[in-house]
Amino acid sequence: MAPLPVVSPAALDRVRGALWGVYIADALSMPVHWYYDIRRLQQDFGRITGYEAPKKVHPGSIMSVSSTGGHGRGGQSGRIVGDIINHGKHDRWGKPGVHYHEGMAAGENTLNALCARVATRGIAQRCAWSAEAFLEDYVKFMTTPGSHNDTYAESYHRDFFRNWAAGVPPEKCSQGTEGHNTASIGGFVTLPPVILSCLRQGLDAAQDAAVRLLALTHESRALGQYAKVYSQLVFELAQGREAKEAIRAAAADVGVDLDKALRYDYDDTTVVQRVYGSACYITDSFPSVLYLAYKHADSFEDAVLANTNAGGENCHRGSALGAIVGAAHGASGIPPRLIEGLHDSRAIRTEIEQYITALFPEEAAAEKAGGVATAAAAAGGSGGGEL
Image (cartoon, rainbow, N blue to C red; front, side):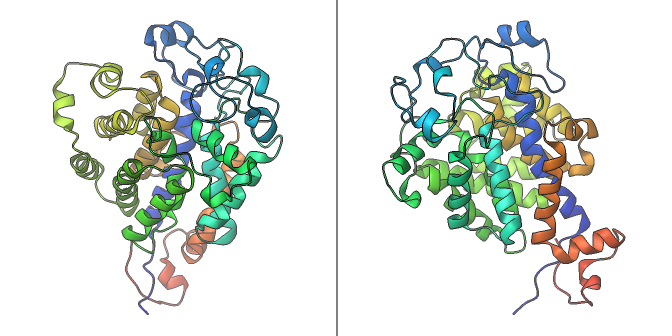
């Protein structure tokens, strides 16, 4: 059997950067999540440059017409929200103007990003990605009162637990058949820790794992195809591929003409809102992710702040973007204030380091010992390629 490739210190930095990026971009956008009216965003917050708490009233909230018993719109007679998940939040859904993330603190993460932390912790605990283990951890997290502080849960969570509460086995609880809102960027938020856990095994393994994870919660062939492209981009950036080159390749794979968007004399918000679209649908949101990643390839901070201030589905779009630019720059290229300002920064740091140590133990030990010795040398010169 060929020796496993050595993961370089630079690659470890890029893995850390990708994971931090998921949480940073989400938390920056949380207070203005689903602000489609940019004038109101600017009225409420000006231009966001750091972490903020949400306002008490959300000007575009549709929770009052969203189903608490399953996916999509509907009434609030269902008790999936309140009794099964998002405990104690049911009464907040039936009232107009309630913020999706009411009561959350500045720098706090929304539910999907918290599920990425669930995936990260599970991988660290078991030293590998496992679909069965993730389902076990996901169900436990979502059904445990007090496990998180978010008010809103996306359709796919509500559908999953509607099925689960009816006795359907977890592996068969994914959200319905392909529909207009099934192929949503929200499904990408949990992918980075799974993709990066396959860094030694190769791109095919990373893509297979990403598609498998999505299938647990989203029955969407379209979303799976986009996930393969996204997985390749994150994977190759973690390996050190030049960012703009990698992003251009991903754009070509999904038929996005980045040059056309860059030729417009528009600001970022206008491109996201009017050229590609700021909604959750993957056909709108993924081109916006690629555009922002490409235009701001030289600055992690500029990319994630441009995403936040563009409004719309900026939390989940932001997490997908944050992993890309985080992998491109590494944790060392992220401003410390954005890491330290996260509400749960210390816990997240611990989880990321446990993930690194579990998946790349020799490299982590070498890094700890001096930061320059290769893992192969630390292991007695076992050889293998280097990432």
